[in-house]
Length: 103
View 1: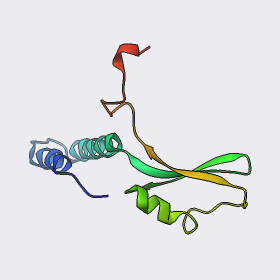
View 2: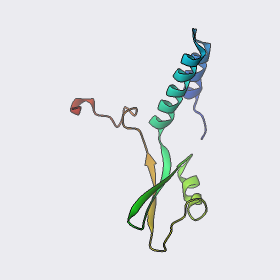
View 3: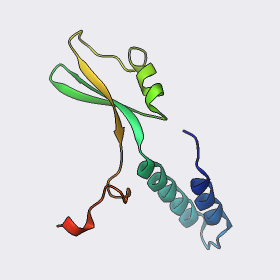
View 4: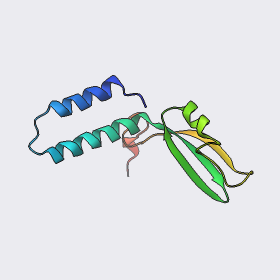
């Protein structure tokens, strides 16, 4: 997955910030990176086989997910169904969250 300039900027600012504790800084960095990556989303392959759903991924892009089908993503039966999906975290993606309807 290619890193965006905004992601690099956030990480750079965290690395340059004053920190009393390296463990605290490490946690801030990891939390920020997870939030940034999931707000962008990731491609996964969803397979329905033998009455259950299986989710494979994440993949950097849709083409990578499609190429994995039949290689790293395999089904147990010939009748399995599947598709490539873009998965996003609705809590960090401001375009998808709706704070007006929060419970």
